[in-house]
Length: 538
Image (cartoon, rainbow, N blue to C red; front, side):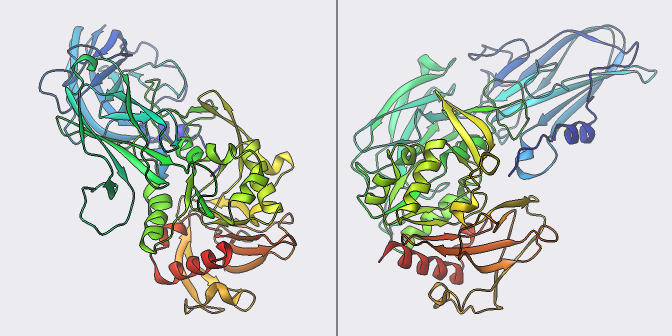
């Protein structure tokens, strides 16, 4: 989707001042600060404190202290600010307290419940006197110097230094957690029915025994741990699970790529750039997620951050896990690659020698120059492509060390994505309008719908959120095989398409964001099965 700054909506919804003007003569707080009433964690400062809701004593609560210059009512509200990622206003009130206080020094405490999700929370303090004059602290914008306290509720933050590893490569785990001990174990997102240790959150299958790590020397600061050398496991999607002695759990996903390209003739590219673009982890502690989806002022993201939501990337279960589960259920095997691995292939020529088919199961929105070049050249040489989501190859990004820097739209740089994908992004409404695809191309590509029970005029599924359609830049002969007419307004339809090139390339595009998420539906499963057979050559 396009970047949007929802901050104005947030301010309106929660009464925060958009500007910095305050009511004349309003009461004021002096010496405002927040602590965890214990030892600080590394990075804590005057307006940032780290707490652990599972603790009995160490870092168990946040205490906000200040001096009030005159009698007033002080209301402190705790706001969760990452909810813009699912289309709601940019904040959600999770707790509040109000006190009528005399002039002088005071403290207000928040002790998060054990079920409080780990992330940072903005604390807004509104001070109002008897004449209704008020002043608000904590109304700062993303990227500004905080004007109110921020509390980091700590879970088990774990991240790997890179998104993918080859068998035998050492992997360093970055850990921030104040637990005394951690149990570390690696799981493969597989589908075997044999009795093995299974992680219920990811449905992963254990490939290592649990290892106990003594963390007592690292309870006040992040640390780096040489975890493992990736084993001789099959290429795929893996998780490191870290379980604290107080039951907190965190995950770090990684891809095990093949030792060499082409160990299998199909590659599945998981969109790791998009994972981090949608990562609302707040590393700088200003109370706002560090993502360009939060503010136009944020132009880059750190690709080594742990993921919010216990370490599982945004919409991961919809786009990636659903498709990987389908691969396992149907007995298919493929080489798994990250965006970095795709770029490191060297050229589209090398990629074409290695693979008959490359599948993008989810939302490959952010692409570097090298990544775009490699995919386009691969297609030009007759390589087959399958895009099972929407909004692919839309934004140019570049690497600067460990950061991913946002650039412009590829179409505005003379390389419209529809020239490769067949369709391109035309709209998004956060899923407010969704509808079924109507089959339109069953006679043009009968093999695609074989065994599905679908024919021209048949409908299936319910799709939308973000949609694509053909443009003047779409390759000649691009066929609309199904459509949701005018879903986002007149002339803005979702189009599922297919085309072939003179060099023999076959390219399928789903045209709606959530198609891969429906692959467990029988007709969609069979449709993708038909595509796999046709495009993989087997």
